[in-house]
Amino acid sequence: MLSRVNAIETQELRKEYRGRAVVESLTLTVPPGEVFGFLGPNGAGKSTTVKMLLGLVHPSAGRVQVLGGSPHDPAVRERLGFLPEQFRFQTWMTAEEFLRFHGRLAGLKAAELRARIPQVLETVGLGGRGGENLGGYSKGMLQRAGLAGAILARPQLVFLDEPTSALDPIGRVEVREIIERLRGEGTAVFLNSHLLSEVEQVCDRVAFVKQGRVLRQGSMRELMGGVLPLDVRVDHLPPGLLDTLAGLGELRHTDTNTPGRTDVELWLDHEDTIPAVASAIHAAGARLYALKARRPDLETMFLDLIEDTPDSSARTARLGQGAARA
Amino acid sequence: MRNALLIAELSLREAIRKRLVSVLLLLTALFLGFYLYGIVRLEGTLDQRSLDAGLDGRSLNGASNLPVIYSAMFGMYLVYFLGSLMAVLSTVGAVSGDIENGVMQSVIARPISRAQLVLGRWLGFSAVNLGYVALLSAGLLGGVYAITGYLPPAPLAATGLILLSTLLLTALTVLGSTLFTTLANGIGVFVLYGVGFTGGILGSIGAFADTPTLTTLGRAANALMPTNALWLGASYHLQPAVALQISEASRGANPFFANAPIAAGLVVWAAVLAVLAVLAAMYRFSRRDL
Image (cartoon, rainbow over all chains, first blue to last red; front, side):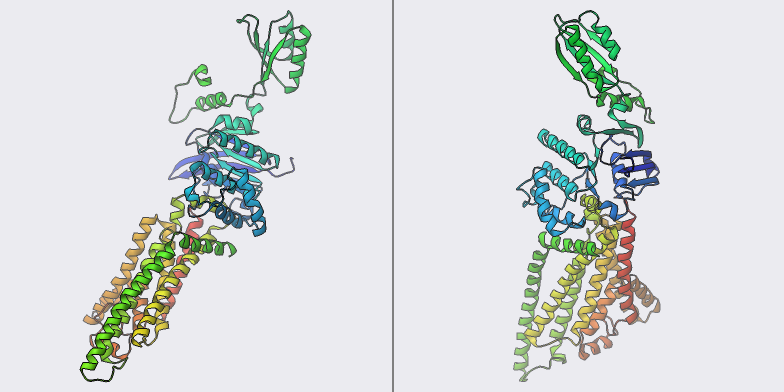
């Protein structure tokens, strides 16, 4: 893994428009084959960054490497897929013509395309609709067609800029499945999104950006300080159980207010401790109702991080923790 | 080059699918039908008059046939004008249109260089525009010949110069569409076209009034925008001796027709300018943020 070249590497990447920095000193590393979430508030420079990574926008300063080369090199772009935030395509084409055109631009052979196009249309849920004009497509269908275009040439790295903005809940689940399938095939995905729950569910790593700077990046666990919160519900607390649990992790919270039910929140250092917690509860003679490891809560992290970072336009009013969790 | 041809093919298909081609064919048929009907009537009138005058027939290149000669010339002027209009209108959004409606991003993210894209757009639109002008010219001159038996002295040379003018205008419009928005580009290229026409008018007044300054101004405008000079060159090839004599007698006091062939240098310059415009468009588009 280490010997393989990173999917994306940027150093001190900067973009100015008329003297105003949209992206300021962005340093980012995306390992190969990972699903990478790129998060930030509106106007953080997310789309501009994606465009620089694709060679659509020329950086004012800094270094960009995509799949080990420059995005301005067509040989590098041959291995990239891209779903733009503004998914607008030639409305006079049918979806099949659109995909054939893009496939030919990507260097695919005619025979290959004949097999591949129905396949990707099926994948994005447009099976059987490929003969219709894009002009008659709904927004959601257009976004699906764009997604089909992005994965058409079996890229090594796919950029998805807000890929579910026009999709209904079913479509969102399908996109998640597509992303997971891409990961399974070893394709790296750069997911630009502000839908935190979506990012939380599929991403291996995330970076938070604000005003064109990376505030923090890493795997979800790393970002949470390596802590794994565990919710435990038992019928009662036999003597000594709390002490045993405190030995396994950090005891954060105990709730015995409801008769016949006790909730305990435990912070573990490692996933492997979870079976030991279950065993300890059984050994103490308590009945176990729930044992749930909570994934790090991205929304809380996001709000804390974005609001804790002062900026020039100083939004100083800091929301309370309760409100942030709401 | 493969990618450039792919884009050219796309542009052609776009022209067909957006019904540009079918509308053009229909309007061309209407224009030619209308014009040629006029010539049929004209020919009938002239024949009748020569019969009334007790003549056996008319010489095709003689003064009695001047109405037919001038209708062929003005017809070709309309071809030049319609060709120019078409070159600008069809091509005005060749690059800017795709940027403005967001289509460009997903295309440029593919392994195609931007220079290839610009070249392909120019090739595709040139094919449409040149095809249109060639069709119109052939239809008009062929129609006149079929009706009256008259053919201008050098129809191929004349059509060639008009085609070069269309090619140049297409190239300048492609360049404009990498520099400006679609609307600004359209206005800009038409103003340039106007500059060329102004050059022709100034030059002809300068020659008529024997005023060197005006002639120089006209020449400067022709160098900046040679389309009108190319038309004037074409008009020379459309005039038989009798028409040229009239032109000379009036000392060129007619901004539509010239009584001298175009300078070879200006033809070369027009071709070079077209190539330079496409190269500039490639360069400019390669450096632009999308």
